[in-house]
Length: 302
Image 1: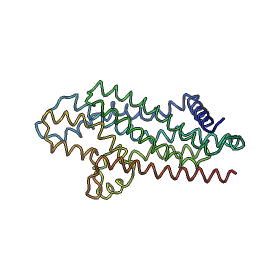
Image 2 (image 1 turned 135 degrees about the vertical axis):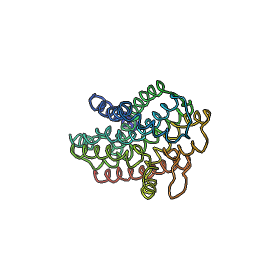
Image 3 (image 1 turned 90 degrees about the horizontal axis):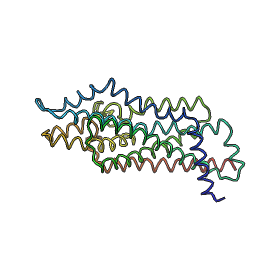
Image 4 (image 1 turned 30 degrees about the horizontal axis):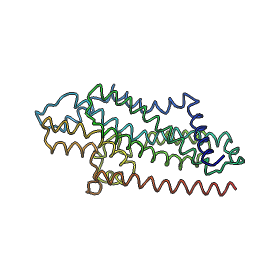
């Protein structure tokens, strides 16, 4: 059996192990769904008022546009955050194999340790992608119900944005959790990431609402741009609809800045292409680190 076939078999094995426990999949899915439910039940009016405050006095707009852009902003937050937090949760198979000593069996089998490590990465990416697509479908059903103004091109780009975010999250999870070997440590890492990541990347609160110094610090983090690219493609259609409804371009620009579709760092506005460059550049650095860790561990296991 070639290494490619072994890799495919291991990816299938890891994926099956993950989905074998239905509760594990449910727990990965429930966090983003809870955020969506909290928005619909409690935070909806807060978001609506925030957008209304950016309108000139006396300006009225179709309620579906307003409801939709508030929901779209939330979806951009949920997907950009979950692409990282879900990756940390769905990487549980790698840690469990170390806990159950299954990794020892792999080490004495005719399978290269590099193949095993790559299989964990590919399986985690695949599982996280499936979870994210489920969340996206549910969120888009909600947006279709309250007000859909997203064109086909932006939907396609949202999927690309998810892939970029998942790549970043999967690599980060693989690096961090390669040093985790107990269930308690895994739970601690997952809890820490889930509770903190959304705040430090500006998903739960717009970065523009923070102090200038903190804005600049957060602007140095690649996760911020994972949120920024998602914001652009979710909000574009709604902002175009607002312009057609007569909203002045100055107000539209203010909305883009206030809600992080436009990100300013050290006084300079970061264009969308640069956001992709920063995020993918960070992925390249993480990939190099991940490969180095895999090679070092492979050398030690010999």
